[in-house]
Image 1 (cartoon, helix red, strand yellow):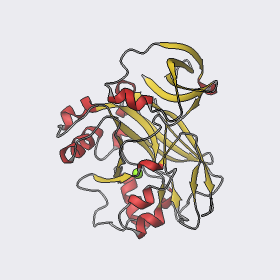
Image 2 (cartoon, rainbow, N blue to C red):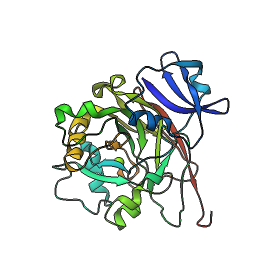
Image 3 (cartoon, rainbow, N blue to C red):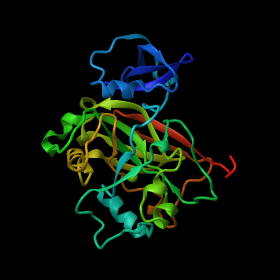
Image 4 (cartoon, rainbow, N blue to C red):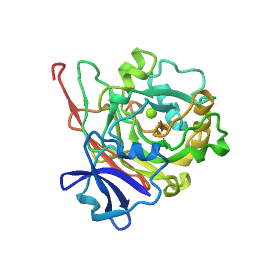
Length: 294
Ligand code: MG
């Protein structure tokens, strides 16, 4: 199932997506903008059988972030594709770069819940705070069940599905403050959506992730090329703390981010960032700058 939170004829609904038919079928109830029906659904054990009433063309439906709010920070993984690990260390923006660009263990950091935004919302920043904003197209795991100390072999039982996430990063803040949290957590720096695909809809072996900036392809990689695969990531996190339904794990970005270029190509006001992956649809976020007083 591919399911998202969307607006249709002025109402906030849950929509079940049929990509092949380019249709969205709507689950019967409507919700307020602040309600978090997909999160509530996942926490209560998943949607199970869904009854729908009415449908619309996919292109006519406006998708919101699948979640209106997150319960916890996004857990994220740094340097999880080989070529990206190398480009990041060579860029000079990794204050924690070691002797080898390939990590021995997954590098885990978090993004603040307040960074969350929708699949078509603006990425906004104050140029007085940062002038090196970068995109990171990623596939995030959505946890479906409470899990603690699961093995990699059992980890997928706890996964609800997958969703696109842009791990937008202020590189200067990431470097200056050593810990990555600040540079990863600016408001609007976590576009998510347009829908969550359950595990049966995505196969790592043929799930291709791509990012374009102003129509120019910058990233293109396969989910199977993660250094630490999804079962390993879920297991690793669960050894340290209890994962909860609705938790997100951003699995890392492939080669092709802005700091990989010489000179770096940071996002500018007016840029159009598009991210897609097989079965996960497409996000499209425009970059805007704002003043301190706004
Ligand atoms: Mg990232």
